[in-house]
Image 1 (cartoon, rainbow, N blue to C red):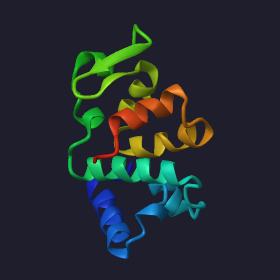
Image 2: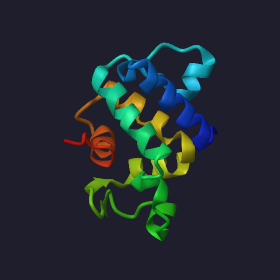
Image 3: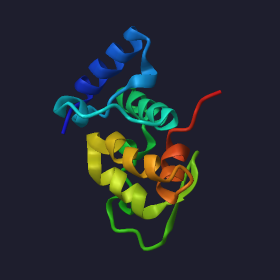
Length: 127
């Protein structure tokens, strides 16, 4: 797993280059993989990385017992976010520093799917 310093470097280089719309998946970037295909998913991934770098990520700061266990309900309520898919939220939490990478595939496959709606709720666009 990559640490926060790596994410900070990635975010800084993307922002300095003015190409936030072309951000790569962190582990895929190291492996030489293609950029994230869909603009909305790239923007969502960038907001996730920014939240991780700023230590403002709801999912990474959640130390509740419910976040650490297997969900008993299909939905979990998060303060300031609302209802989210409990299983996908548990996957994000267990991914640790790699949680931003976890959201890419489900969002590229189904933007309106439960997992992607959860990611969009966690890392919503700021007005």
